[in-house]
Amino acid sequence: MIEGITKEKIGRVAAMIREAKHVVVFTGAGVSTESGIPDFRSPGGLWTKFDPEDFTIDKFLSNPETRRKQWRFLLSSDLLKDADPNAAHKAIAELEALGRLDCVITQNIDNLHRKAGNHSNKVYELHGNMHWIRCLKCSNRYPLEEILRESGVSSEVPSCRHCGGILKPDVIFFGESLPEETLQDATRHANRCDLMIVVGSSLAVYPAAYLPFYAKQSGARLVIINLTPTPADRTADVVIHAAAGEVMGQILAEVKARLSECV
Image (cartoon, rainbow, N blue to C red; front, side, top):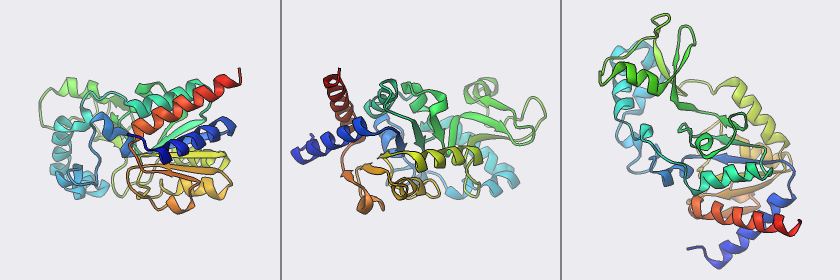
């Protein structure tokens, strides 16, 4: 249930979107939890079920048993469930369809922004995409579904069909740098936008969490929509502590109403 003070803030955000020329949306795990995908750090999250040490790049490369654990994790993980975009994903995609969105910068690895309708060249996945597998030797990239289909239910780790190299989920492990080109593009958009809307991120994971601060320092307005406080709340122009789906749905409705007034 959206309270009166939040409705007033929603109206302010809709007005900002209408006035802005370069809108960037930055998303985190709080967007996808409403689609049934668990986050990593909160109680009951994935790090309460798996040892984060098994997700370091050094251990993955050096330890065959770690790679087997990884593969078993992939076979059993909720991250691979056939999740559907929720109201927040759909609202963000519709902002793009309305011509009110430059891009989405996301910390999520679940592919739901693309599935909701955001164009691939407007989605910057800072932490990779769980639905792809990459060979560490020849860099060939395979759809995860294809590898799973070929491997069946085997818990043995498959190898690259081209060179026999180690296959790794195309996501960022602890100890790995973010993809350089993606980070550069995301930083460029953060520095040139005049409105950044953070949705469902605690802004606790760096260097991705620097981007809203870059936007603010470059003169952009900053909106935070998250269930819990973030380090950027003090510098944001609008802060809404509520569920992403309901808030983004109402923001979209307000934006469409305001745009129709201009016709």
